Image 1: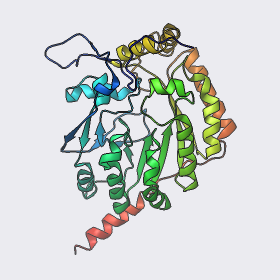
Image 2: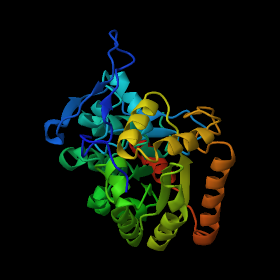
Image 3: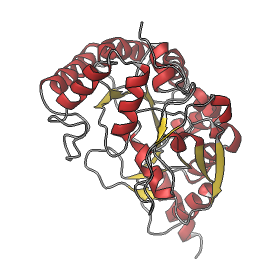
Image 4: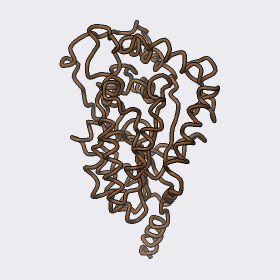
Length: 352
């Protein structure tokens, strides 16, 4: 049993608030050791000018994304999206999970994008950065509104989430799936509840996520497993077990990436693990470095998500074995781009 440092903030991932690197006045990291009840989550309305973002990365399987929320109350300590919160004037630490920007006009902006004569029916990812089914979605329902727009325009959409809240929208997902317009990825890191509660404090449990895969699959919504991220020394021992459970639940495929602690995430993660898992801390940090040529992060395209070296190769081989044992013969869905094209063509011809 790990002995945690006293007075850690319960219910939150980050335990510090590093200074925003874009601030003109750089302050020392702010350490808030206070009761969680006093750390209120703030929802901050925003009306951006665009919502569909180009993704220029050969490492990713999608070219476009929509993020209806900036910041994420899930509080996952390893989340690469933390760094992007600095662009909005906030810290990548506690601010990221307590100051959530709500893009209220996202459905209208998507509709405008899909009305464009220049737009091709390239699948769009929800979200690619922060989770579209984080707690704010219960109140604001922006993701649900976006799905209605995708269905109306018969446009393909991909979804990645770690929250069982996606099941609320199973009615829309079934209709999209019937037209081959949707695929879902459920991210699972661990089935160890004690680890999840500190590492991903406001997410669904591992069991709930497996159940979510099962229910989506039963509704004929194609769903895959994402082992993301795999953190050597923390959850790499669960690769085979989670893969098997997801396959039994009906997942059509498995994907993975190895954790990398880029930007301020390195400081936030190291502070977290030394407080929450002090006995394991140094070993885990060292093993992460082993996967990235002696550093906590390697941003080189082609290797940043998989890592390099013996340990990263062992992780990759485990995932390959899991694919062979549990996912052989399962087919990846091909999303339908023709319905949107036909709709647009018909709509434009009707003008004459």
